[in-house]
View 1: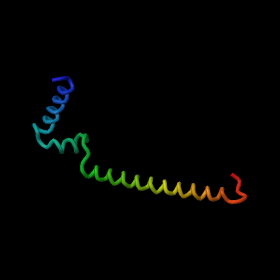
View 2: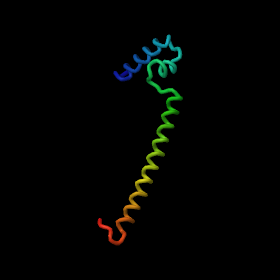
View 3: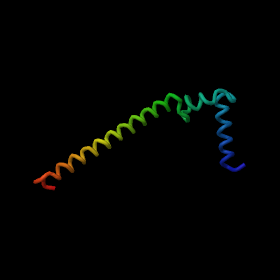
View 4: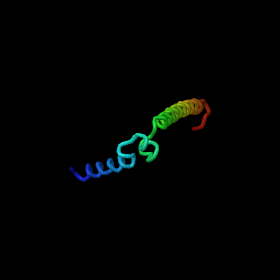
Length: 81
């Protein structure tokens, strides 16, 4: 066994010991150590990512609209660029 696997095995044994010899490891990882996000936290994060994506798309469309207006304004006769 290489050093990485040995360290991982030792960490797993420590984790199992902390959970009472193999008790609820998932609960320990999500609640106690914070090493794994809960399903609720992942859903909330996903919702936030979708909201930010939608906001960015709207902002991009707004910039595009403003650029079009500026181009039309600059193309008017007598407009100085």
